[in-house]
Length: 510
Image (cartoon, rainbow, N blue to C red; front, side):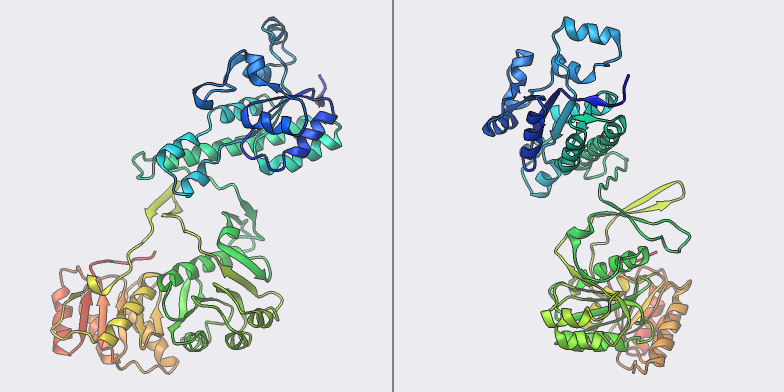
């Protein structure tokens, strides 16, 4: 039997009608008999094109408020029959079942309905039953049937039938079947995740239909891909393609700057997922300058992010620095023009897009899943551990340092003063090493640590950290507490006039 088939009939039942008209007109020109239901039938007849109502084939009306329209042996027999099977061919004649060569379906928009905040009743009604069944049947029988499973494929399908004058190849039908099972599996995953929002069923379903091959992974010998809707989060204004490592740094930058949404102008520079400079000031220009001062060496080739519009004055300063990516909620026209002066520099406008509630990473032969760390340390959660209490200025610096600490690799210590990152010790195997690294780094860039504050992502098991910090001039400390030897650190701070607050919340970042 020939792998190329001439279509003589089509069943069309879609939610989205946009883009359907040229297909319907082409099928009509090709002499294809069109079967349809409900709103799609009205749409087709509204174009002045004849179509056969499915009810006329099944001799059964649409029932239960439209919940059951196509679920009938005459419809599914028309799709699932094997045209090279004698028994199937005989039964088609015996039961007067029409052959269906093309099935075009576009499902109820379940995910969009959930995202809109609709009621549970409205959401449940958007669980497509007939459509998903038609897709599965048509894709299963790709040997004889071509299945168009989404409005996103209307254009490609129109090209196929136009170029083939109504004929499709086996390769066409198999390719569209693959697309169809992608649609059906994603749809069912979305429904399951809605019902399993509390993770009552210990199962992980991840389905991303927007995928992009990257030049490579972390290193040139590794393949790399990004699965996600990048365009929902950013408008890319300029620059080269983002790499695997760029995307990891952009993710870290966005998560860090989310801590400062709605705050005074704040600017951060990140390198290898950690902030090497961050400052909050009265203007974005001053915030940038003081962020850069935190570590002008590491800033080379870094990722820059602002919580405020970047103006031309700031752009002129940024333009002096080699940097990979600049992210902001907006750029002035003149700033955009300046920053586009470097061909490869990536400029991203960050949109208001919600990040996933859960974090997933591969582990051994499976995956680890956890809730996003939604806790941001706040003054009302402080436990004042020492006799001396921090001043209001110190409290602001402690909260500033804590936000940075939360988004820095553990073990980490963050030193800050006047809402500026002085230095941090990142990803060290001991907290003492992290502290010493941060002190040495701060001094190397001429920071005066007298009156600075210290943040730690986890408790101090011994008083050595507060002792070293005291000798460097640190005046206040924020840490979660919880060590059986907390009192030793508290006693040291009391004896040396250091204010210490405890938050009760650890912020490990492995």
